[in-house]
Length: 137
Image (cartoon, rainbow, N blue to C red; front, side, top):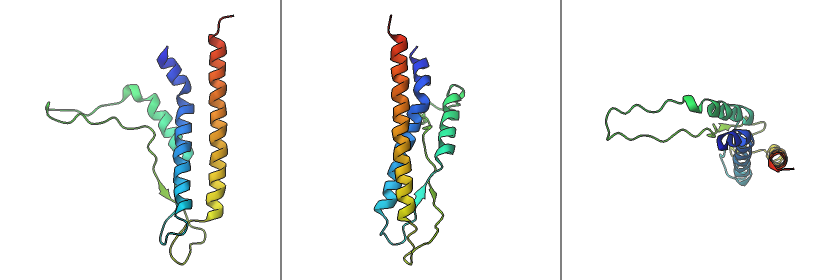
């Protein structure tokens, strides 16, 4: 029962965590807008979410590390929500080498905040629907 509920909410959980991470990355770009030589960073949200969901589906088939001796470290499981930060292509770099474009960053920040709020609303509706289904009549 709990694993079914976990799977039911897994997509929304992953989407919210990745939206939060993207907000931090964009905020870091904005905070370093005046830092000489700073390169703006971001990640492909759709691709990262697809990879995370594919990793969760294949989690039961995940292969662990082979240990040939009891003294070997077991290793930690790989997080499915790791992001691959890339440098953003600069449209008009400044003289000091900084590639942060405040208009782009503010647009992305606002877009991500709206999408975060929408994901939160979808999650609340799913929880409300689940609560309604579980209530006895």
